[in-house]
Length: 432
Ligand code: ASP
Image 1 (tube, helix red, strand yellow):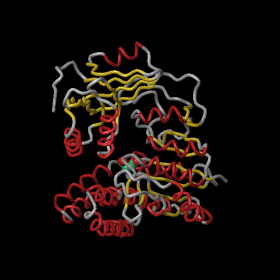
Image 2 (cartoon, protein in one colour):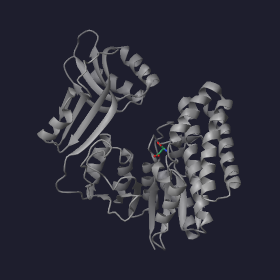
Image 3 (tube, helix red, strand yellow):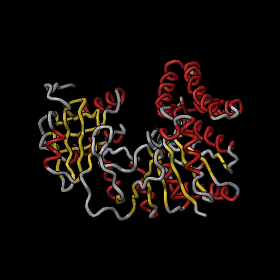
Image 4 (cartoon, protein in one colour):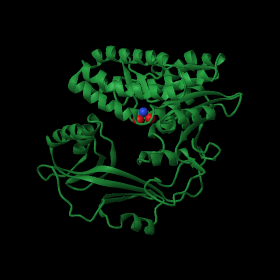
């Protein structure tokens, strides 16, 4: 008998038929014990972001109205799975009421705290639905509230995890559960701050939750089930002829995810690497497929790996008085970026200007960033760009990737090239 950790993302539990598929995957190997991390179903997290806006604009009324549709969607799937939906409904209503209580405290802190109380409900809902279904199949299942296990600081929307505390909590509260059950179901993406309010780990953070559980439980393998056959050389929605990699090293995976590859959350690798836990990326559509194994040893030679990020902004930051951009300016710029929680895609320094390429953080955050940087620097900004990163590039590939595009900026390292491009040949319009 072996203990495993599986993670199922939103697409793999998006409706009744997918939940049925998940239960088949879980029960495939008789005798296994599995800790299951689950994301919110389908696009629930996006829907909850809208509820958050409604709460900000209309208060409790807006929140409750917004929740009706989300609650109904979960109950509809419960009906299709022939579950006792009245029972599930009362559980989900308790979650909604608890959220209202937390909101009264969160609103006094900041908008990010409010966001986390609301947006975290997707995972609480989905795990209740999945465990109700597994229980209806007479499986030995426990549902856990992982907020009690994943201890974070109070950096809402991007909680920083206290891994030692997580390990202790897992030893004290999760391991003993496996004496009586075969499956323990917990939420991805969420944790709690020292003051007891819910935190989230950043969008798509459920992979990271799964890695933390794998670390705490000391398993050999974490399996992340996805709608692709494994780690691919590029996004199949953008390119034909993508290849699946059979193996990949932790180092390569961390590089790829750092550059924006969406296959796994960038924070996932570190806890796994620290304990030598291999990460298996497999398809829930074709569970027999080999998938990709990410571990200490990868491939000797990698094919070119392409990552494209849209909605990027290129900003030239220069001194107002034509003085050099020296170390003191750079440290000022970085502390503004850090304070505004802006993640850098790429950057380059020249004598009087520092260029950064960042993901558009949304209107409000961007306005704050411009305001903060504008105190001491002049700014030029170009929006709606793409950042193309290629590991193990070759000339021909770069030519193909930049065909009909305007290259505004390129940065070459030994194995990696990054290109900031305008997706068409239209005249570049300067903004800001
Ligand atoms: N549900 C969250 C999101 O959509 C977390 C996750 O799925 O990883 O970002």
